[in-house]
Image (cartoon, rainbow, N blue to C red; front, top):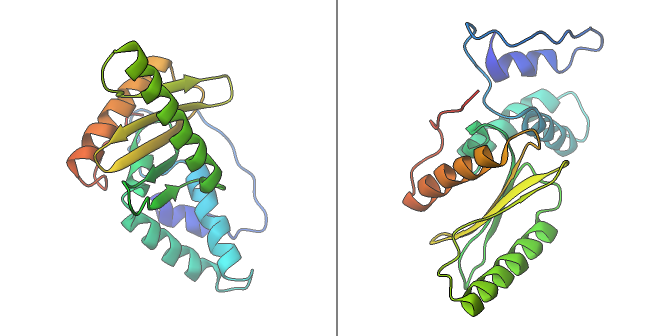
Amino acid sequence: MTGEAAFQRILPWKTGSFELLPADPARARTIFTSYQGLLLESAQAFDESGGNTSFFASLSMTQSKSSASPLAGLARFEGVQFVLTVGPEPKNELVSWGMESPESVSTWMQKSLESFRALGDRLHVGQLQQVTGMSSQNHVALAPCPKGELCVGFRPALLSEDVRESMKTILAKWASGISFSNSPSRG
């Protein structure tokens, strides 16, 4: 077995040992979801199953549902840890992937984007395109687009240039309505 099917097979093992090996460039990548995403999907499926033996059947259903989500495909971009989008008014539909508390992040994102828009208006510098924040623990990028507002969290190990470039690509595809299901991953 390979890919997520192999992960699902290994997950119920009660014992075992793991060894981290250096990346092998000759080996094709078969899992494109971040490890955080795999574990979050597994934990969600386990919760929904009530911790019973049907957990792994539930896991397969959860992964199928999340794969259908337009946000799940964003995990295929290098370093993406979570994604949140809030649709345009009047609905303001909130959709997230890989997050524990999307409501609080959504509120923060909307307030932050509004503050930066107001600052841009006062300075007469044009329309807001993207806001990127970096720290040793988190990298996050925010952007308005025709489909609403988008927030993407990235691994802190990524360079700021990589975060900005990935976000530009994500925004272009998100705004154009292109499906992310076959988006390439770097790395």
